[in-house]
Image (cartoon, rainbow, N blue to C red):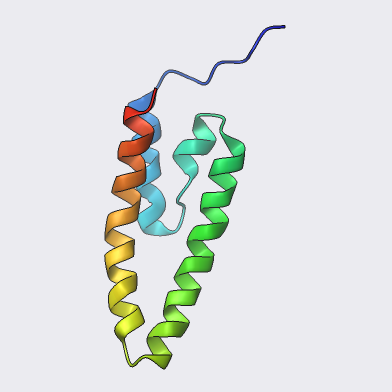
Length: 86
C-alpha cells in the first residue's frame, strides 16, 4: 500500500499559517494535507474568538485584553510548530 506523503514545503505552510491573524488559522495544516487538524483549527479559532469577545463584554474588557494576547501569540506559535515538526 502506498502512503501519500505531505508536500515538502514547510516554509510555505508556516507562512500560510500566519493567516490566523485574519481569521484563517489552520490553512497551513490544510496545505500539508492534515485536514483534521486544519479544520479543527479553523473552527476552534472562531469559537475562541467569539467566546473571548463575549467574556470581554461581561468582564469590562478583560476578555478583550486576553483576546489580543491570544491573537498575537497563537498564529506564530502554530506556524513555528508546523515548520519545525518532522
